[in-house]
Image (cartoon, rainbow, N blue to C red; front, top):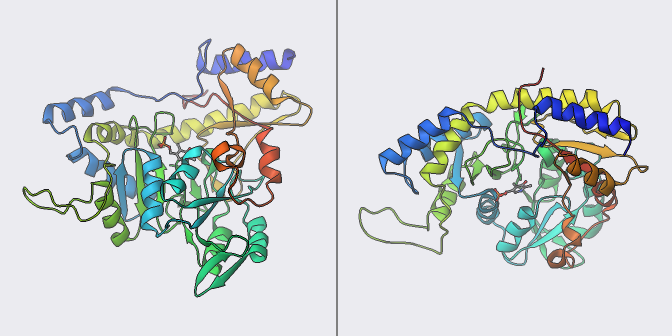
Amino acid sequence: MNKQWMQFVEEVKGIYGKDFVPLHEPTFNEKELEYVTDCVKSGWVSSVGAYVTRFEEALAKFVGVKRAVAVVNGTAALHIALKVAGVEADDEVLMPSLTFIATANAVSYCNAIPHFVDVHEETLGIDPFKLEAYLSEISEVRNNELFNKNTNRRIKALVPMHTFGHAVHLDELIAIAEKYHIVLIEDAAESLGTYYKGKHTGSFGKINAMSFNGNKIITTGGGGAILTDDETLADYAKHLTTTAKVPHKWEYAHDEIGYNYRMPNINAAIGYAQLEKLEQFLVQKKALANKYEELVAHLDSVTIFTEPAHSNSNYWLQTLKLADSLNRDEVLTFLNEQGIMSRPIWQPMHELEMYKHCPIMDLAVTNDLQRRLVNIASTPLEVK
Ligand SMILES: *Cc1c(COP(=O)(O)O)cnc(C)c1O
């Protein structure tokens, strides 16, 4: 790699003031310690406690939904969101191939089948225009339900994912969901703090999922949430994630096979402190994105991915887009050797052993982007 790239490495190290720059580290201060200490002292560290409720209420308010149900991780949130939205065994679920594996696994936990669709260059998420053309060809509505004419299976849901915190074309996807009688469920795992035309992501689908894993924009250690405006679905999601236990003072009564998915209070204590800092993280992420835009301007054949016009993005992970003349793996090797941690985007789901027999549409953009996108150091911090 040439002098421009050496210069880039020095500048990035300069921003962080370190010789080794991780991809994304959590940012804590005394608040997390204060709330965790309070939680431990209270004795309520497990699946019941005041911080879980506080965290749920603050999160629901921030996102602008009626209810948030806190769970152990984002994958569990997706699993239960799909289940309460009515996804059943042998249903197909439309989702991007270009996503983190959790989206596909959650569909599998419902014994349903992922059906992989292509993404749009402008958002890195599902391309509604291509999807509409595809559905008009391969599917048909029978009795208000959508069927795949090739497999004869019901297509129950559409799960867009807001890649690296950039909102997908939601208006168009909502129109498709309505026209084709399928349920929209957002995988908003990466998009806390991202707005689509002024409205927070994770509030558009019938029911949606978020993640608070250690590398996400805020963390609870491990954690996730189910978000919805539908009180009945929220109650059911809470019931299923708390072992389907029927409230009683002392009896163990359960009315179906539930899950032990409730977020522990000690994790919620961390999350509550993190939520207080979210606005600040968002400002810092934007500043970092602007800084990278400046730095990348000095590199040939590279651009930095910037938010689509409809999106006010959280810039969770900063993303370089390489031209054909650059070899992705050479860039990755160079940056990692220089101490700037960088990662390729995920291997597309349709290439993985366990998912390669699932239905797919033409995935030209997915396959192209997969060779071009590189995530670089994205921890929020004050940028001058
Ligand atoms: C992080 C993430 C999830 C959920 O991950 P957990 O680690 O289970 O919290 C789901 N989907 C996407 C796209 C993600 O990035």
